[in-house]
Amino acid sequence: MAQQSSEYLKQSSQLGNLARPQVAILDFGSQYSHLIARRVRELHVYCELYSCLVTAEELGKHELTAVILSGGPNSVYEEGAPHVAPGVWKIIEERKVPVLGICYGMQELAHVFGGKVAPGQKREYGKASVSRVPGCNSPLFSGLPEEFIMWMSHGDKLHKVPTGFKAVAGTSNADFVAIENISSQIWGLQFHPEVTHSPLGKDVLKNFVVSIAKAKQDWVMTDYANEFIEEVQSKVGPTGHVIGAVSGGVDSTVAAVLMTKAIGDRFHAVLVDNGCLRKDEAVNVLKRMKDDCKVNLRCVDAKDRFLGLLKGVTDPEKKRKIIGGTFIDIFQEEATKIVAESGQCDFLLQGTLYPDVIESISYKGPSATIKTHHNVGGLPASMKLKLIEPLRELFKDEVRELGIALGIDETSVWRHPFPGPGLAIRILGEVTPERVAILQQADAIVIEELYKSGHYRMIGQAFVVLLPVKSVGVMGDGRTYENVACVRCVETTDYMTADFYHLPYEVMGNMSSRVINEVRGINRLCYDISSKPPATIEWE
Image: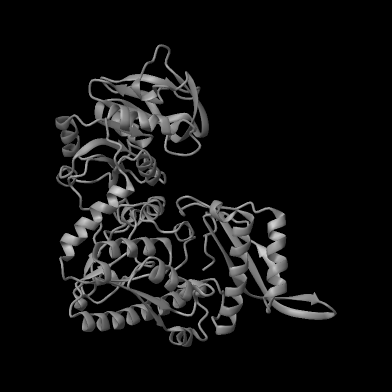
């Protein structure tokens, strides 16, 4: 990708606040690692996620409150399995940092401290009843009953407790599903407390993070905003200027408002209308951001330019490349104008979120580059812009919390995500002005019905897809042969997995009736009931 070249602006892949105390989560490749981070953040405790192969030099730069070892797909005893560096264990011992190993993380404890891990006679996947050892008063289980349900996902299990540890809980399939070494402040769990299928899992994590590790619950978005504003004012200085693209989505809106509060009109926001936005989106974004949020925003009407380049193109990847490349060209043109007007512009605002950072540093993740398909990636290095990324420490729910703290209206804060290429990848086949107009109308009706019925906030993402298919219909006394559209509504918290939303038939019926009657060009409306995986959320 373009951003990997030295000719393009580089993106950093680590966070920079070394002074902030943190819980360090070492990722062994588990699909649940990001959930551990989310659960710790929900306790208002700051944490960061690292590869399990992080060096002692890197980890040692930070003030560590606790260390959590995640699960992972490997067997700890196999050749080539990942292990924590000896230097990291030395830091943990010298600083007396409490440790919690989860699933593979517990097996790593056994590997390091002389336990025995081997395949179990039966694998254990799903809910399991965990029983505390009689007389157990482990601080990890403080306030929990003698038996409780937790989520298991393992084939290997602990056959021998490590030296200095004792068992504190088991199941019918495994005697050692929780172990502890009080003197060393190390605990291990075979189950996953971070998943929603473990009802009391949050209590276990709170016991470890807050009660045992004594982590301060001071991760508050209002404080974060004030801290960022001071940092930017210092970094940009009294005369510096910053440019940034906005889309009207929650991420760019929050970032733009935050930057405006920091440096006022010296932040220059650019909205590019590529002709594939939602119905009346450009007008609404201008009102919301320029009039209501006082952001210094300019809108570039580039509809004809984009739609002209998309004419005859049906391949989704080609659509993305055309839109992405043209967007960069237009943004660079506007940036050049801004530099000419202001005399200088040294910084670029980018809406990187923490999941992007996680993707770049996770074990067996991509090399240290952040994905850029929703950001302004690939800008030429000749522009000599330095990146400012105010949201790169935050998850999506924290961005929303920050938006509320900044006084942004709830409708803007709770908007569903919208893809960078816009409706172009929700129009399967060729993108034409006529098909864009049809989809804009249908999409607006569906979103309106979700608001009216009270379902919008319960849905992670909702949209309409215009299919390259026509069907026969009857309207009045006449036969029609028009387009088929499909509604997609999903439930998700992290967008990595998603289930289709169980929308009531009455709401579906209202959507269908309105779309077919009000949108000329659609005579059939379907509802997508596939989950991710195996399907993706978007169709292209």
